[in-house]
Length: 534
View 1 (cartoon, rainbow, N blue to C red):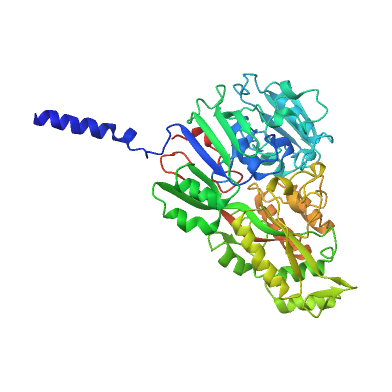
View 2: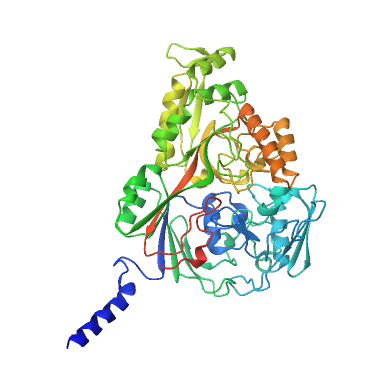
């Protein structure tokens, strides 16, 4: 009798791991809650970070970035270097070798022709592509054979190697066999039910509501670890918080800093806040008055208490900074902020620019009040709190700030689709830009990347900055590049297209029955989603 009892206890102990799941866990089915809607599921015609995140599930690039911010092969067999022969001695020819076992979710092989086709679509002026970098650096892209892509560059470009077809927006490889022959892809049905070669595929998409994904039976990485992924768009951070607490979702992606401590107190939940190369910034639109005057941009920057924003709005969860090179990057050089909080200097700059205080304290010039409109994604608590503080601080130096927020898909749509940032319909903008680990910043500040050619939404066109950026990009030597990027940062602070507030520590919270999650410091926390298990 005693032996039988011991046997029962042992059997119960052996069964414990399976039985130890939380009662709310649905084995193999992860439910993810996100705040932002998608302008498209086709990464070619989207500039949203949210679409880059979804692309990790549905697509392959030639490479992707791991949790340490290092480029790793995806559809390519290796990341090209000069050491492995992938980069020519003159730095102008890059060769990518493709795996032979990559297939789209419909079973069709992915070949070099698909890479060439996608490059052609990125350069097709009829497509509403948010930006053409780095594809416009290529003079030619050819399929040497079904599994070899050879790129000839106009000039050596160190950023090109890891930016060319990295999984995400403007980097996911599209299926030529489904899309060839169409004049453009802007409104194609493919954009709501794309066929890719990632670990999962779309089963159903209810626009701006729910995306259901199931395993891609042809994924080259083997059988994905989940049987179903449900991604729910919940446009309220408070509702997302409650949904995690009541177990309606398993993963709350990109929570605001204000919820970090509350999330840490949830039972059965893992919380991460890893600093990333995503910088949260205030953008100054130099494309229209009054911010076309650099003195007014500098005055506005000096009227804002950047340290107070990091401390009281972002709650010291993130890394503060002013430039656009990640403080943990090899390319980072510590330098003083050229526009620190200095209300007296801000007032003096405005006085010198002819803006005089009116009866209500707001400055005027030539009969016009100094009024600015600030915009960000509606419903993002942290940014809305930042807007309130900025509004108060700028009023103290004589600038009237009005808040007019909008959904992400309206703000970040390409120029051809009427995006507010791309069309310059704002004065001050708050948003985050996720940088690849490479320090190159031409997309956001290069003089040649004003929309529709890129995401220089500030519309600052500065030849000196552009020359420094070109010199830094043209060398593959990291030590020399670091020196040049220190100069780039100084010039950036002088012409002021934007000012970073913090480097976001992306706050994620998930059911601790979910395993394999490795939040990344660059590009996407979903980079390895094919290996997650629940």
